Amino acid sequence: MRTFKACMLIKLFFLSVLVCTYVEAEDVSDLPGLSTGNLSSGVDAILLNAGTEKKTAYLKLAMPGKSLDSGELKWDIAIETPYDDSGESGASAFADFDGVANSTNLQLNVSYWSIDTRPASSVSTIKTMMERLCREFLNDASHIGGCGTGQITKDVYCKAKNIADCDNESDDNHKLYVEQFEYQREKKRDELVQRGFLEPISANIFGFKSKIGRENFKFKDATTFADQEQTESPWSITAYYYRKSGRTVWGGGLEYQESYTGSRETQICSPLLVPENATSCSNVVIGEPTQTRRKMAYVELRWANSEMNFAIAPKVTRDFENDEMGILLPLYLMRDDKDALTGGISIGWQSETDNVTASIFVGTAFEFF
Image (cartoon, rainbow, N blue to C red):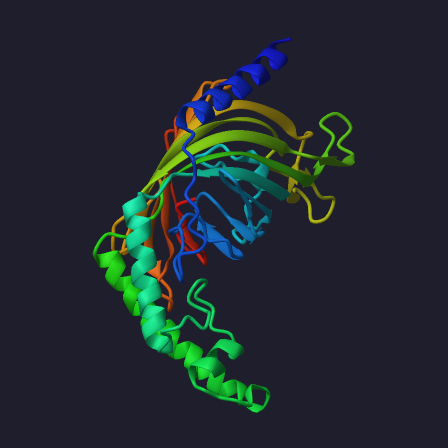
């Protein structure tokens, strides 16, 4: 009965937020060469973490979103697997209490983006500027096509260059022409950014995320000392809401999680017959894994400076089931050859141990969401 009431409260909470924050979306798909801002990467990402806290490898595949009348539906899948080259046993204790990350797990994330309306005056100005650029480049006084979508097909290229035999025209020439146009369009886009026309669109983000793993434990029975093996399936489900405004994202969620922790190795020594009084010692795990249930709430902030030279994503998590609190502070500092923030350090703290941990992460760009 308590579980049923909790689920109903979660649904009512997110429904009320959706109703209160709904804004009719402005269609920006016809703005030549423009995007709705860095809302999400929408690309594959590989992330490696190493340090005193998190030791995992992470592969993410983001699928194309589906546009709706009032926003966009997005989903992605990911695979995460732990690794440990330190020689120590036992699960990593993460500051966000993600016990499922200790197992090889599959993740599914589904989100709905309610994108805010861009001011009509701004939309009109942007369209006019970009279409004028396109027409000037194509020398298009009578509209030969291509400027409505920003796509210069080979047919449009041939019309612009007055090429009668388009079938025999070199594809390389068409490619070079498109590259020249893209260069001019990017320059114009940079100009609009400097003038404040292309500030990333604000959005309300609602979603659910689930994780399910598979973890194998080997141990010795505490009574018989016989070898035992046990397979468990840790899992979690999360409902969340985020608000994106400019270069800031804030929000939080509710999560239920069941994870398993194996016992740490214990050194066992036994006497040897030869030589006399000698012993043989080995490290063994005694006892079956223990299950941990968590009922958590968390709040999170993601922010980047305007030049994207630095970004932070602090997260505070409260586990009401076990009366624990954790704080995680990723600092994005390193850039790749494409000038994107792709790594840094992550500092974590837990109330149970009162220890500060640190991790180094590399391989994925900072995302507002």
